[in-house]
Every structure is written in structure tokens, then in C-alpha cells.
Amino acid sequence: MSQDAITSGNVEALFARYSWNMPGWKMTLDVHWVHDMASVRLTTRTRNTYEPDNPTPILITHTYPVPMHAPVSYFGPWLRECIHRTMMHEADEWFREDGIMVHDPHAVLTPPRR
Image (cartoon, rainbow, N blue to C red; front, side, top):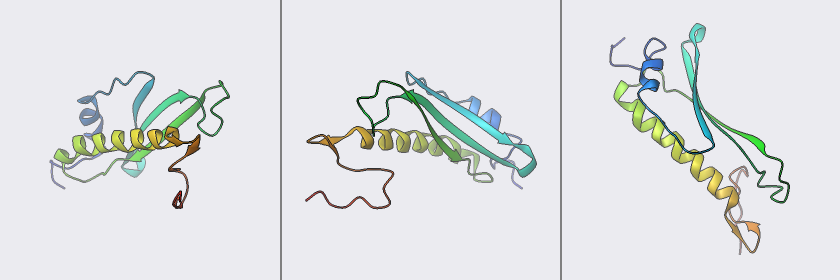
């Protein structure tokens, strides 16, 4: 295996090179040594978009499996894409037309609004 590949032996050092200090959010790495796997978790506590009037925060977690054995140079762009997907997902939940969610990211297929 190439030394230039993402592995359980170097993924922590790769992850440590990056930061994402979005207020209220936390980015963590979970390494599963036995199975040579790792995942990145992006978490926050916020109001539930399905019950926006309920002030009790809920835990939001987005988990992404690390592309093990991909080139090391892929890690940064991949991590950025995970953050972008998470932010788009959360933005879609809060984006409303006349109080109705325009695109539900949890739906298998969001039907056209009109």
C-alpha cells in the first residue's frame, strides 16, 4: 500500500491538520482500528426544524465514512465537501416558502411544490 494513502495509521494526523470553528458545531474523528475504518462526525444542538416552535434543542449528527486508502491529497477536499453537504442539508431544512419546507433533505424524493 502506498505511503500516500489514507490509512488508520495516518488519519488522525491528517485530521489534526484541519479545523472548523463554526460556532455551535463540533467536528470529531472516530477511528475503528480493528476494521481499518474511520468516520468524521459533525454535531450541534439546535431547534428541531420539524417543530420550530419548540425551544428544546435536539442533537444533530452528520457522520461521514473516511475514504480509507484514497490518496492523502484527497482528505482536505473530501472533508470540506462533508462540511458543505452538512450545511446545505441544514439550510434546506430551514428554507421555507409560506412556512412550508421547500426541500426536505430527509425525503426520498421531494415532489415539486407546484
